[in-house]
Image 1 (cartoon, rainbow over the protein chains, first blue to last red):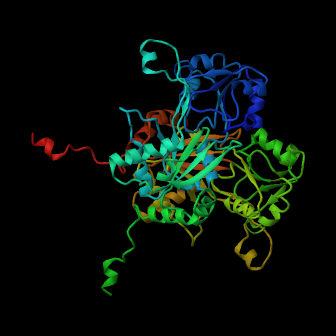
Image 2 (image 1 turned 135 degrees about the vertical axis):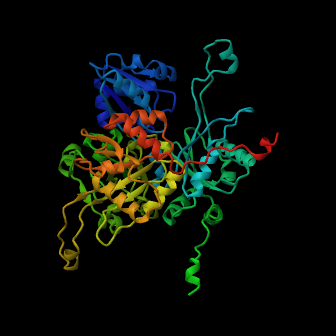
Image 3 (image 1 turned 45 degrees about the horizontal axis):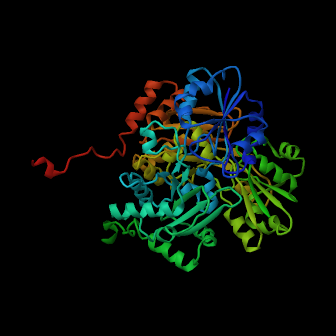
Length: 299
Length: 299
């Protein structure tokens, strides 16, 4: 059996009881280590917590070495641990499809991921549209396909969850060219960078999918002991010091309920100023006022 | 401290290790018992698992008796257990706001909810639009505001998560009128009822937000030992026997990736027939083909 086990967001003890029991009895345990990190734990503390060794699975192993991960899993139990949920932002459907081709049964032990725990900021999950990802810009590479998706979400009033880039085990162009297996230190996008990049794209596109006054919520270290939320405009949070990673950003849509707003006030500097920005932002993409049909007017 | 603790989807042991440790040391433990159920557990088995008594919190207690729940929580620890995640489909922001007004600290211990675990059907979470809820229709009450939301999602190509009605501790009109505290047996909407109601609304509205050939995925008992997925058209699944509750439905959007489709094939009766329905459905709301600008043609 292949077990896909979600680890949740932060602590070693965020694993479910059923997940922990399963880890303890598997023959081999892999930890997917390239799309996210467990904020309050590392490999050594996980191994101590489980009382067993854990194999780090980098992108190369997962994408090209899945047969090694699945070796023997038709008879023994193999665990594949994923920070958050196995079917969260990064899905592992290709590993599951390969397992099924090899006749290996698969069971998933779910956990919280940013995709649902972000509801803790007070915005209602069922009011979110499609999720977008924001990668680190370089001088020559500023992909902006997310812009159209934000536009689509906001045209129909929905909030947008914006996942921020994580660079783990990346090589510099020079080291890659010379074939040197030297990796750059990991980088995690912070809130200020995310907001600045968003504003840079709006500056280029000028279609007003959002403006510098559009309200956003910074979600920092979600689910960890130092979790913090901060609400403000894109412009304000482009200068916000969000501290240690991980971070996520939410851009508000037009359909903000009073209860959502009431909840966000605890995360703002100035309640009246924030409400005024929210009201101003709601004018974008607002449907035109109702006009009764012609035939009724002729009565 | 008020602890909001997610229980996950099905088993007693789907609680996180940190959640279980917290439950064991709280002064009082409440279980929110009106918006969902834990499929493989009940109150007695939870009490046995935790080794302590658990107070059932019905809608009335949560909505009007929050001061009773929060009593003493500024000095002692109180746990409020929620099936899924505390900030999943039903949020408990009002309880948190009340706690903060009373000067009571709040900590959330997250878990999986249908809002993220539905990714296990193979459709990618970041391609979902807003979530809708479908309530049991009666002869005189067939609310259809969800229809416009499905239309909005599908116009921009997104999948729609459709949460199905749960009726717990409901009174009949007669018993309510006579003031008799007699409750109807709980009812959980199944897949056939959901698909039939969706088709009934399309029949009334005729705006083709979807048709009887639109592909959907039935998600039954998600996260439980008898979890089952079934993919087919709305018409096909309007006659599907989905078995014991709980159920959720996902309607596909136009942006179906090959990997998503490949994954869904394991849940269909006839792969070629399903692919043909998906391709046919993708014609709805498809953007017009690209036409090069006039000035290029004049060269």
